[in-house]
Image (cartoon, rainbow, N blue to C red; front, side, top):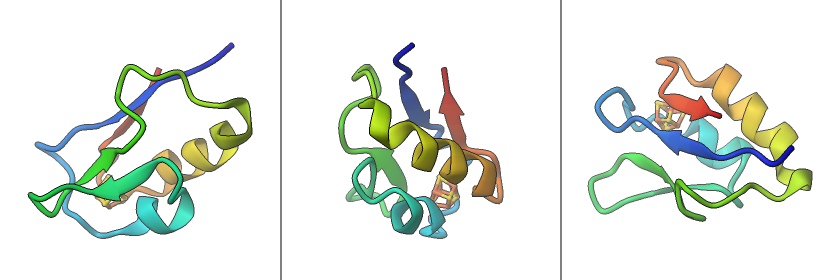
Length: 67
Ligand code: SF4
């Protein structure tokens, strides 16, 4: 089933890990914090799910919510 993901900007510390692991999904906003460049309500293409899960698990402050 397709998933969506979002970065909790109140928690993100801008370390850049997610943007290197899954650059097709995560980028930095003008605020220097990561965000889902596809949109928080966009269903993730299946081929990107594994890297998004890896990014979520690797985030040092668990700011990435996958649902
Ligand atoms: S890995 Fe986590 S803390 Fe680092 S930029 Fe991404 S969301 Fe922010």
